[in-house]
Length: 237
Image (cartoon, rainbow, N blue to C red; front, side, top):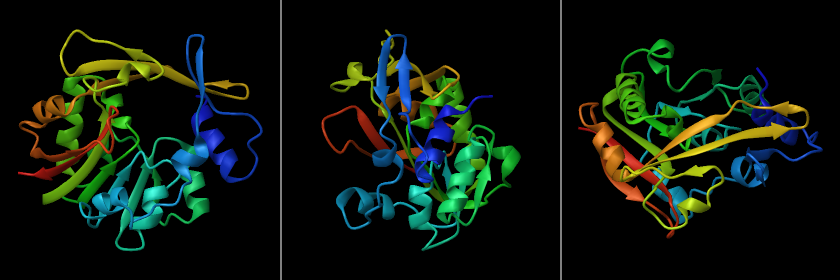
């Protein structure tokens, strides 16, 4: 299956990217900012980095790890396992010095790891929305609880459909249900077109609802600014 997203990021890392990575929804397009999103230095001294640092401990599971930006920082402190569904991204992480980069599906964690394997988990990049539905989100949180310890923590992120400017997202689709919306888009790079991606957007209240019965509770939510993007810190009950 074509993987324009992973291939473009790998090519950027190798200095071989000659064309932009395009996000598309019909005739609407956007150049995806690879360097800013995946290769910026993690700064644990700034407010955002310190917020993340204070909520994670090892062993850490980094799912949807991209080019390994977070993993490279945290593996200096404790064991960190980076998981990506793209072979190109696994290869890129290994080339960048990620010590444990694995190919795997974040929505199939029980098949990849034993119970209580990790002390914390990280899912940053809004890939949480690929759960597709409230049921899918609940299933993911249950699987994440299975592979983490009884006193584990986690950080996830998403877009809040009830916040300002959410309709400006490429591929945004409204939903009549409060706290829910969708985003439909795909990636193009050189001669490759990726599969159509359906992201569900969950408000923090919907995340709290999905967490009921999974072992997790939402401790705090951080927006950073007045936009729709937020990070949520979770902890085991």
